[in-house]
Image (cartoon, rainbow, N blue to C red; front, side):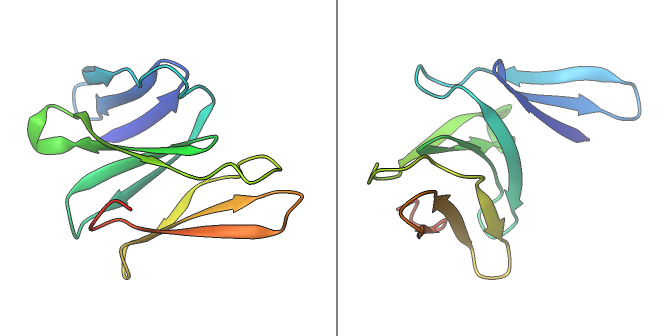
Length: 108
């Protein structure tokens, strides 16, 4: 499988059949999704969008399962990334030189 993030949301494509197997939109305010990460600890696919991080559940046809809001403290939200070994996500905030650390087990 391959995961594709776009303004449409999260798309999942089966690389064996080249068929779209899921396409899940994100709520309003989740534009400009560019980053994708998978956390095996909780079997969740995450995407980053500005000051939000969205989690999608592979066991439920990749439906949206969680939304994590990142405080807007000036600046703009940077590229979301995650460390699957620690179950932590990171969102840098430009101009204020800050990085928010997210707990991807509790989704906070």
